[in-house]
Amino acid sequence: MNKIRIVFSAVLLFALSVSVWGRSPKYVFFVIGDGMGSNHVFATEYYMNQMGLGDINFRHFPVMSMVTTHSAASLVTDSAAAGTALATGHKTTNTMLGVGPDSTALRSLVEMAESKGFGTGVITSDGLTQATPAAFTVHVASRYDNVGIASQLLESGVDFVAGGSISIKSGDEMEWIEKAGQKGYEVFYGDRAYSRVKGRKVMYLPVDPKCHELPYVLDKEEGERTLVDYTDAAIDYLYGNFPKGFFLMIEGANVDHSGHSRDAAGVIAEVMNLSQSVDKVLEFYARHPEETLIVVTSDHETGALALKGGKLPYLSNQKCSVNGLTQKIGELAKENVEVSWWQLKQLLRENMGFWDKVPVTKQEEMTLTSLYKDAFLDLNGKTEKDLYHTNNAIAVEAVRYLEEQSGVIFAHRSHTAAPVGLYVKGAKASEFEGCRDNTDIPATIARVAGLR
Image (cartoon, rainbow, N blue to C red):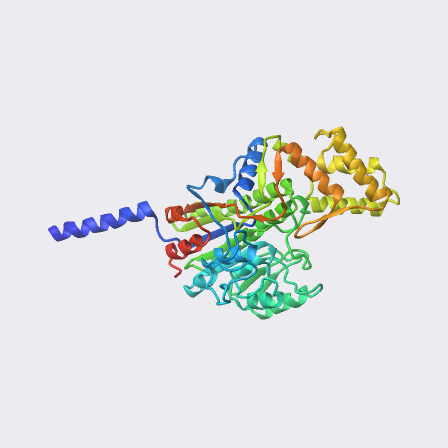
């Protein structure tokens, strides 16, 4: 009788431990907002609250903390070293991908999942050969080794990949699409949207195969693909093909790109888009709550974004990114032999809400008029360059002024060493409460999901 009681107690204790601590996750989602600092998230939620759009879903996950992001030799990381830390649990030197400072290959979560028979997916709004997605699939000494990255990606064995088209030089996109097909990938691009695939790997690309990143949310045209589309397709494919379970990395890269451009409306639109992708993950979680783990974080902060009060809803009047506004100003110049101040003023009214919905001070109008004269009368238009784009000075000034009126400040155009948020929900979520550095996150994922 005593033995029966002991056995019964042991079984009961085990059952209680499972219910309290959760099962090992079978489905792991690792969501990375590139450049997404905690203020980016807070500003987006505050904006959404003011606009009656609710909350950022992941900001209310049951486990939240902050993690440091420094690389092996620098307080401020680049995306390659940060991506490597998140993919492998090891620090490396800036510009290095999937290798340590001594160039020794580091095992990634994708490779660990593959070795255990799990399905694997890597999706991004950036190009497939860019730093964050590449950190999960390749091992190269330099993030600028595009040929090596593209070649290793196709050999990596990752089951589902989606992002901007692979390209090493202008015009070779179709060559790499053909190579992907030869490596066993069913490639979806152009008018061919994802449909359910069994038994083959999948590569999902933009409608335009020459597009090396997804368009900014503010610039998206009807029919163009989004990170949400990629997320939906990846879940359908991985769940349908891998009954043992899967690992999926999701990157929202244009948060970072908007930060480099100091484009607050762009940042908010991209964080909202990432949150919509997490909505898709949460729909899956609702069907498999005891088997699903969702981890959301960032590789680093971009732009040193701060809030000083003001009226964030003013940002809703910005109808395109600063890059899109630059393009519209260029198109205006092409369509007219002479561009009048009235024409430019009308463009700013339509795309930024100036004068009608956003008050414009006399001093600001003088600044914009001066830039107009430089560009269209003196034919000496100024530009400003950030990491990814060169923009018209009129567009840069218009976006800067709208941010000032909205109460948003960017200290500069680059990465910072600010800690970033970590948000976790699902099976074994409590295990992440001790994460304090970005390398702790993949180490914990590997441990709780049994990937080691």
